[in-house]
Length: 389
Image (tube, rainbow, N blue to C red; front, side):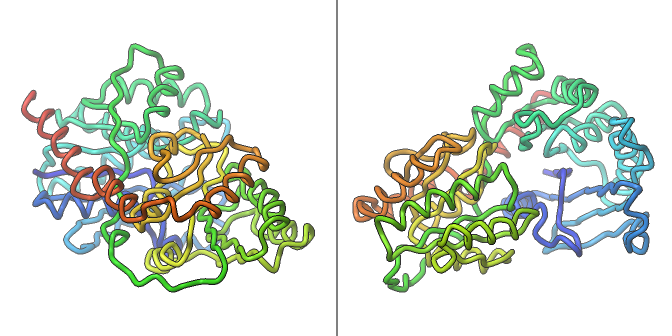
């Protein structure tokens, strides 16, 4: 089967970790014997012309990434913020031209898998109208829940969903939210979770640590709730001293969070490890005792299944995605924005850690979120669509 994947973000020289989950899913589909390619457009606002972007933009790059053919084009959004559909317009014009170059070299794909309606799905819809190639949408993005989308873009997304041959969401709650936002007539929404890279299931020798170690992985911004986590951690330290918190990531609130940690007197127990590559993230998860996701909203949260794959229990907020992953056997769910509940969960899980069957956590994760399980779900959907054509 020839599958063309259009992600809404992807890795690039200045952001090597961007879109890592789309790349891993595409490579997993390729492992199953499919011909898989990536078509990605990066559209930057025109204000970035004053930076060095001009040296790398407005050019096509074709790469062979372990057999995964990647078409990458980088260019400019010449429209101002007063025209919210401008980026979508440029995306479709340039993306369609790029697609025509692609099919001349590699032939027409059997199916297109677009990740997010805006703007990957907009391009997939255009291609379907011209070439009659079916497309499916997997929606990942939190803009609908966070009220970060213009009305005109919401209407455009509705058209993309309506014309898709299959609509997928990464969590059931996101599907319900989209039905409410777009309209109940645009359904059904099918749940296919994100997958976890097989490297996270690798066996390892756990190094004994005198301190109970908590890890948090994510972009440092308000929605991720790290300040609430620090508040809760301060109260945890009043009860238990041999405990530490490692935060992995970067973001606009990093310095503020560091300063806050120092001001409330917990900086000796809190470590900011910076942005790490996949292998280093894996090693940090393997060394920790528990992962905490403190977000106000998550459509899924891949870091949760990465931790579970390593046999680590998870404390997560009831923020949308975690509810379809976490249960009594693999962790604890708490209300978002509630430091008291988070503190109690940390103390509970550290006190009763031996009650968690770490091998069972790992095995249960494999049965639901491994590469082989999720790619079979996707290929079954692809085949259903192609048979019905």
